[in-house]
Length: 194
Image (cartoon, rainbow, N blue to C red; front, side, top):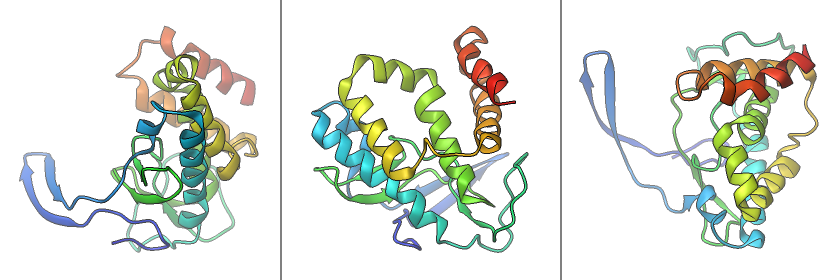
């Protein structure tokens, strides 16, 4: 079940393994939005538009009591909201035509904070993650998905402080997966924002 219109998997069981926990989740309908980027641009753009609207849905969900606050985030005046902090085309499920979001996966980074930070984090993933950059260059449909998401999620209309926070978060998150040279463009963008 989910709140605010975003379906999330139900935890069916869990097991601990030292410092790690494994969860057994129910299966949600749909498929990752990123799969539609392998097809035509129309479907991919529809999926991007649907995914971008998830940001407004989540912005209406109050943060549950006891949820950690966003690390290193700029201050906010509004009430804390539920943030996913890893919304990207592989974590959002959509219908076969891409028009409807059927679920949101991978809530490991969930935190309480200003919804602009969730939008900024997605902006950084779609624009600065080396894998997303490679997909956008190779697949016109990926660019259509990303463009639709940016439009509906208003990802091009973010304060510089939120973008800078998202760059720092992305650099820390990807440091073990990519070389410094592969992340040089993200450090350059951060420098321009600072």
